[in-house]
Length: 480
Image 1 (cartoon, rainbow, N blue to C red):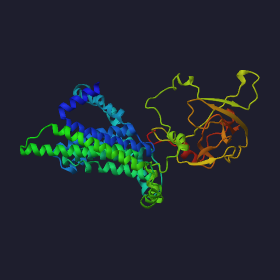
Image 2 (image 1 turned 120 degrees about the horizontal axis):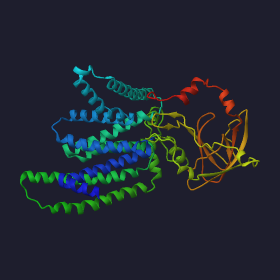
Image 3 (image 1 turned 60 degrees about the horizontal axis):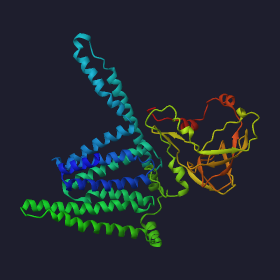
Image 4 (image 1 turned 90 degrees about the vertical axis):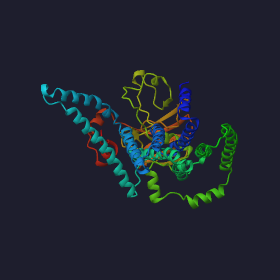
């Protein structure tokens, strides 16, 4: 109801043509975001959606001002860069403290003749912390760019989020500015179309995300063209009937839907030989520098494999935006797995062994959550060993796992996975380093090596880790 009232108010305030134009551009931008979310690893849909809406409105407003194109672009880039840095770096807590700190400073200056110099340390500490955190963000972006120039494939979540956010912001501002200033919707949406088609083509995705984009673009072309004609008629004093808008809508909408439907049909007709020829000729398999750029930008080339869905979905663990103690009592009541082991029955119920069931091991904390790192998937037949050598002090544990309707496909074992009784896939980070494994269905039976060490042995082992282990598993982002 509130949305309907807002749209009605917007139509009365801005006019039906303006509201329809903005909505069609938003549909095209939504198609862009939807397509990017399927191919870009760790794509922040909430951030980019906000940037697309705000950027479109800002570009529309800047087009109304007498600012030249270069100055409008500079203003938009500056505002967008600030918003992105604040969002990605979570700097809002520091900025929200400014009103209080400035009020305290103003009060101190007012009372200076009576109470002495004002206390400025709080404001100075705030500015110092803000400077340090922004410097860390820019440093991570600079390191990512340096690695990219050296053709070193390195996925940096923070830098990638900044780059894609700037790209979305830029195409949104451009779309709003060009549509209003020049009345050229095709030129306005060309950067967004290039961005989307390049991402889809590079990752070998189906072009279905282009259909809503095409629909919005065709309708926008007709709408803007007719609106321009009406403005010329009004300037020349030519009278015309408002019913022309309705007549054009009856003509344009069915024709546009027919064209989009034809595009969908053609895209789904199997031209596999021709398709393979075109792809191998014009979009060859990415190697070398091209693949390094794609990996650094988070583009998941050839990532549409059903077997990897479960692992790709959890590759970035993420964290809630709130500081929570525990996960809530409701989660402890949900049965996800039922597991039986080959251990003999305990003499006393309270003497039953307790196991830690592991499905994933994350590698690095990014400041916005955990990341699984780069992995190489390998497929294993039923009963085939992973090849991991048994530890010196370990025993073989056999577990039978039955999943419920909440089962995600991850293979859970206690200890190090040795084999499973059905075909399974393992994502390896390196020799002896498993990110996770998946199976097609439950129940499954898996063998694992369970280390025979206790708390005393672990504490006695100390914490003298090698430099490589410390850098890989214990390093934290600079702000932490």
